[in-house]
Amino acid sequence: MVDAHGKAVGIACVNCHATAKPNPQINRGDQLLKFHQGLHSAHGSLTCLSCHNAADYGSLRLADSRRVEFKDVMQLCGQCHGHQLESYKHGAHGGMNGHWDLTRGPRTRNTCTNCHDPHAPKFPLVQPIFPPRDRISVPLPERPVQKTHEYLPTKP
Image 1 (cartoon, rainbow, N blue to C red):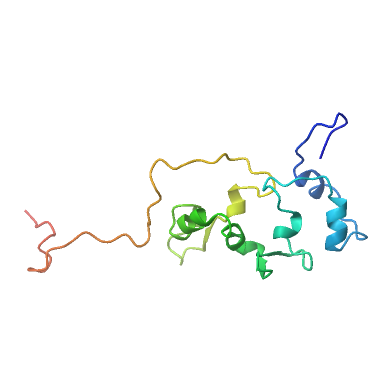
Image 2 (tube, helix red, strand yellow):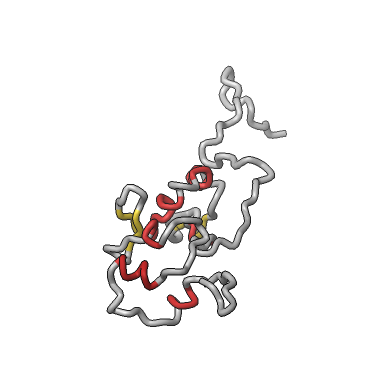
């Protein structure tokens, strides 16, 4: 979008979508594209319909046109951000919320959009100081096998 002087201006989606009521007259993908003409994605040449499902506003769409729920946004983001998706799958990206002991309550994980706004990314690219480590399938240290429990401390 440009201002009155022709200078490019970034406008977050929530500037309108958090305050304006939807226009029921604009309800098809081609109409939405025309209405949003002039807005540019922070994701380069992608358009709204690169990720949003024009046939069902309650879902997203993958590159192969398969429908995906908003709660599974990692599948969508992972199409281009594969390294981050892999570190997410192994526990190094995205935090846990809730309870470790599931008898005390549910456990959930953050998704990409809990921290990153896909419409206006705020975090610059950062190379981790240490490479992500798999916190789930880390091999256990070698233990002696000749005598059972030999590696445990003995009582004085």
